[in-house]
Structures are given as C-alpha cells and as structure tokens.
Amino acid sequence: MRKMKVWIFISGFFVLSLLIVISILIHWGLLTDVNSDFATEALLEYRCDGDMDISVNVNDKDDILILKRILKGNSTELSPSCGFYAVRITMFDDSNSIIFHPASDGCSVLKIGKSAKYIEISDSARRN
Image 1 (tube, rainbow, N blue to C red):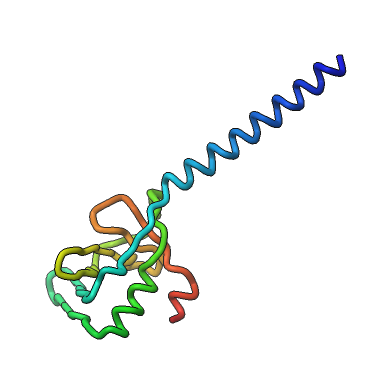
Image 2 (cartoon, rainbow, N blue to C red):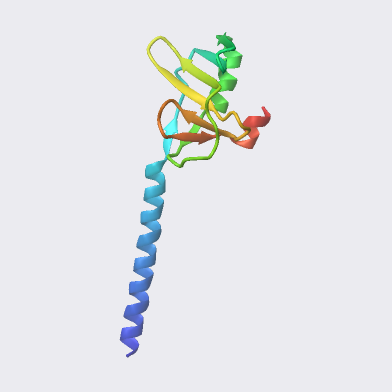
C-alpha cells in the first residue's frame, strides 16, 4: 500500500513537471525575436482617411537608434483588441525592411507588417 502511494506521488509529480515543461516550450514557440538592428533609415507614415497623408523619412543616426530600442522585443501571436490602421513605421536598409503598425487607440502594442504577430512596447521604452 505504501509503495502504491509513493508510485502515485512520483507519477503525479512527473506529469505535473512534464506539463510545465510543455507549457514553457509552447510559450517560447509563440515568441519570435524582432530585430531591426539592420536598419539605417525609417519611414514614418500617417494616413487620415485619405484627407491628409504625412510621410517623414528619418535618417539621423540618433533617431534611428532610439526607434530600434523602442521597436525591439519578442513578438507573439496573441491577438490584442487594439486598432492598427493610421500609422506605419518602416525600418529599412538597402536590402532589408520590417514594417510596424502602432496601435492607434493608445494600446502599447505594435502589429508586425501584415502578419498576426505583435510586440508590446515596454513602459520604459514609452517614456524615452
């Protein structure tokens, strides 16, 4: 009887440990590193119902560095309930580019291009 209880305890512990490891692996699998370190320029675009389209090319090294810090992080496939339509940030160099769509409703989330992946801007990055 005692051996049976020990066996049940060990089995339960093993199953719980296995579930924790699987959960961590799934979480890591949903995260993708977003890296814009290659970028030497940025294009900021604002669209307002076709009435006013504003496009600003950013090529100052210090400004690009600040954008890279803000836009760096891990993406996730979780779907927030934010709106992404008015602003587009394109980070690029001669051969690479990545597009971000900041939430236009105050959320601290960016959509990556046309994908279903998002990154969250940290509080410290928002303050800088």
